[in-house]
Length: 161
Image (cartoon, rainbow, N blue to C red; front, side, top):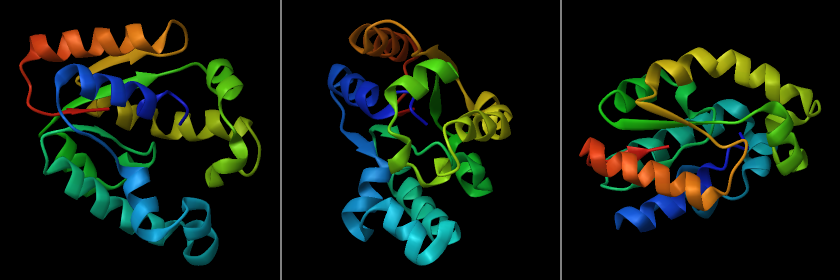
């Protein structure tokens, strides 16, 4: 959460000349605000919708931005192993300076929840990552250029961040 997946992903997609798909935005477009899904139906229902959005997105040639918790699902993990996965890392200080936690249902307990959630998922992220880029400092344009250059060199069809 808060690593810049959407902003960087859009730029990488443009540089590579492929579509950009943000699975959280796809869920919102079809089902309404994520905070409302959590409030009305709970996290389990959101994860079902997320799983479907991820499966659909990964079936396309595109740069795909997944919500940070999408990797919890074993089927999503299995699918991601068939793709190039870019992990975007960020320090807690950097992410908390740029993130509005009121729009993040899993951070309702306060900003320190970010570190706890990241620590819980860190091993999964590292296992799935083909390459890792840190987004804590530096202009996002440069980070996106570095990712696109790397992707071109890796000759992969799909870049999923």
